[in-house]
Amino acid sequence: MRVMHVITRMIVGGAQENTLYNCRDLLREHGDDVLLVTGPADGPEGDLIEQGGAGGVEVRVIPSLRRAIRPVDDRRALRDLGRLIADYRPDVVHTHSAKAGFLGRRAAWSAGVPAIVHTVHGAPFHPYQPLAARQLFRWCERLAAGWCHHMISVADAMTDLMVAAGVAGPQRFTTIYSGMDVEPFLAADAQRERVRRSLGLGDQEVVIGKIARLFHLKGHDDLITAAATVLKSHPNARFLLVGDGILRDRLGQRLADLGIADRFLFTGLVPPAEVPGLVAAMDLLVHTSLREGLARALPQALIAGRPVISYDIDGAREVAIDDQTGFLVPAGDRARLAERIGRLVGDPAGRQRMGENGRRQFTDRFRHQSMTRQIRELYLRLLDERRVR
Image (cartoon, rainbow, N blue to C red; front, side):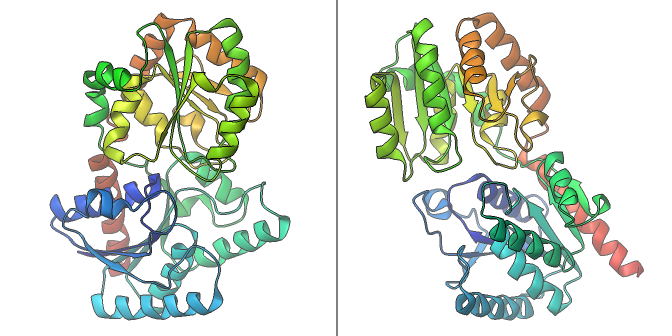
């Protein structure tokens, strides 16, 4: 079949990796024709295509397809998407992210594409927005839901959220977990000693990691507050922050003010290929974001055999299973966060047990080949239903 994926920007991020794996698998393993359409990869996160290549997938960049709402650019992007669809004549248009999801679905519906699918990686509306923005994005999602045949959620929690917001009924959604290359994480321990040595980490230090942009709503302030408490009883704890962003200087100043800057390591922006080694250097992973569909860092850590501690938001509870693969903490509860971190820092046997449970439960579920197989089966079902009608 001919499949067109449309996404706002191919920065280094979970939704983008998901999309690229799907494109590659459809091309390499199923022999489909695939076109990836994206806007410019603006932002400090880095360009995923430049870093790792497209793997043979044809990529078209629409300069006017941008994340910000810009009516003139948006009309131009809608027009360009319509022309691409008319030229490529896809059997399936599969959209990702809010802007590309809205414009891509509209263009595909107008062109009469046989199967139109949208993946909900994370809802574009959330409680931390101004009310007017939240209402606007909710209305946009409801409207765009009428321009597609089915939606994929990366976690059951995303379906629940969208249904509760009145976007569409539950029968319009299917949960398919976001796939990844699990093999580097299964083999990550082979890099542990080398990476820890390169970071200046001693054998007796217990490393608490976090993988996220240094950005608002990612919860770094909460982790720093909890760390100050943990270090009082566990001076052997070290904190490894993977990622970069606009809050780097402010976070560094706060650590200096608390007198714990020497207990934190910042890696800055790293290519995806380096993430398994950094996870191997960790002893547990903490996820304190206040909104996220299902952060890839959680299954990545578990597949590498590391327990996780996560705020109980969105899809986190589907992998962070309390006292089995880690701990869930109410969002914003810094005291509970510190207590749970301290508990795992002082319990190496518990860390090993939870990490092994996570690896056993989630390795196959998050293979990108499994994701693509399920997505392709959905495509075929939608196309068959269209033929019958």
